[in-house]
Image (cartoon, rainbow, N blue to C red; front, side, top):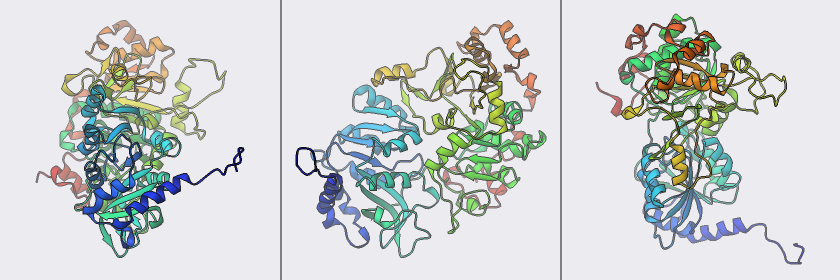
Length: 557
């Protein structure tokens, strides 16, 4: 009872859901199944204007059929939706905003739609809530961004409505739990409906309706990099990383961001890594998708364990054959989980290494520019010094011990520090300078009316920058002026780099705050493709013993 004597209702959300499902009941048959041709009508029955809706759009697997059907609803019935989803990589995700079916977006990764996201923000077609990290967005699903309706995808359903999410489980458990246990509605598209599942990943009583889509859901081999496209410059950067950072700190637990630099590092473990005597000393435990470029290192015995954010097309058989390395279920297939891997990347890893579009003179970096809102994915989680961490490792302690005390808030209390590395060429795509006076994120903040510029990795988290000029050990810099000078020293012929003072750079080299390839004993002339354990996709297939089955677009034989 309330204080004014009237009875307070505590089941409004479940009552609302029951009302919506009653309106949809005529479309749903045994096993919670409905027909593809009824999908639009079913969505119109369960979704209301202004609802918070999640379309499972990971950076790999997509609930694309359900997304296409949502675009076909009567916008006089459904409009102004608040979309809360990991990624918006498909055109249909943004078509919703073109038509007015959706109004507001909270997301983590834009991918191929990055330019269109920026355009929609400028034109007022999209209200941007925030550009999140994956883990941040998942957390908000359970607090203040809980979906009312979620549209998800899975490989298979059985006749009762249980789901098998399989190799690419990714975000599905997080989305479903947040939605269903807040009395929301979960609708699944599956590739096929079968009598018996290999394993049950999502129980039927967490699902409200299931449709077998007309075609299998789209899945992007996002983490596949063709070794044939790795350049000599990227090989040089990889040599610097291995000699100057991996070997220096003996980093065993780490995450590799997506890109050709990290692919080069992976392919050089069985070659340059063995030459440096690093096997068993580095890269033993990784939070990582099953990158095909990891095949030679795994076969060569480098890796003890990998936990995966998602799967990777073509790697199914290879992963199943290596259950000591990957998290493989009793059914023999991988169970990935983006939330768990993000948590591992933030708290259990000693190092994150990735790339970026821009770095400013202080060391702040972002992939969100005025014309391209790529989003951050998991980089800010894995690329941050997690103050909640309490377990110690040698790499973490060494990096922390090198960090001068820039403020005295802890008194004389020692602390470890995660290595956060940005590996970039000084000029990026289209010969755009990576090092800039001011991040474009400032312009984006103005365009999107954001309270802060969207920064991917803040300067105080960044410990190392690696370019073709050498390595800036920012964790060793005694003050902000030395940090800025170290950045200038490795910024090449950019506007920032041209301001470097040779005498100052010389002092930084003597203090080992900046180290060139020559300082590290890295021979630039050796930076060529002979360093790679595999130089083509076909080489990776050979290394795998024929278990790797690359997508057709990566086959040229």
